[in-house]
Image 1 (cartoon, rainbow, N blue to C red):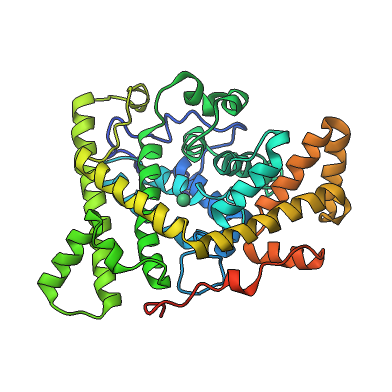
Image 2 (tube, rainbow, N blue to C red):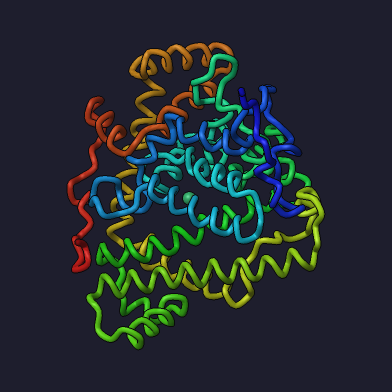
Length: 405
Ligand code: MG
């Protein structure tokens, strides 16, 4: 006997305020529903099959992709976000498939070389409408992926797209329609989007502590002043006595993640109980997000973020690496604007067409899309190919710290 669809509703056990395939605001191009998956499972699968997803493997998170095989890349960061988001979603009876889809797509628009790359590309694009990585992630899934016969992009559900667009400048939001309406009219995104946003933060704060210590750019001594780290670090010492440092740090970081996730779940359940939303739209209409840390945890979290900003992201060695990455991105942009024929054939054709129809703005956007899609190593290779300033070996060499093994 042929089975045409689910015999049961796989989303039946979700809370009233969870997003559901059945009540989704749908896709830009209507498609028959998937036979054996929910709509959000389909979104997740499309994201994993996209070209932009595969390229995350060779993009910088904090450390340039090839400085050491032990550091996070954008891909492993993305996987950590997805598993933290799924855990929180399940505990809150929210839609785990949707949270996972948002998490897997959230960084698709990131440039090579992390935030340094994004800042450089934004500076280049300032005369042409600017560049934001969140808006670019949406652009990747809405427009740039070219895999389907009937439409551009991945034709994802509204709820997935809403979650991908984490931030957006008001002026740009006006051009994006319903998916960006909250940046103009106020309101919150769905609860799965809210929790995935915080799962992102939990993942990067903790893995940046881990990678930062591994690199030797930050030290346990410095972190002893930071509550979120200091308390579990002490607890591990008291419980297990002397441990090899790497193991001590790993035990500490897993406790930090657990503390943040547990606080988030408990606090959010309270807030949800108080607001008592009966539908995802009632959660969207709240004046504040319902997914949140307690005030005490929010303060600890902020302390850690400020520390990482000061001690790691602004570390002279990271700054030197970033400065050279910015120089390369700016040089690539300048080169492709002056020599669009050096773009890959299809991209060059598109740039010429857009130059004719939209002027320089159109050409610049095509060049920005091309550069944003590059991996670190492809950007470096393109720089060499066109004789642009190369990144020095010193900038690519993060001093191997005592823990870098
Ligand atoms: Mg992220």
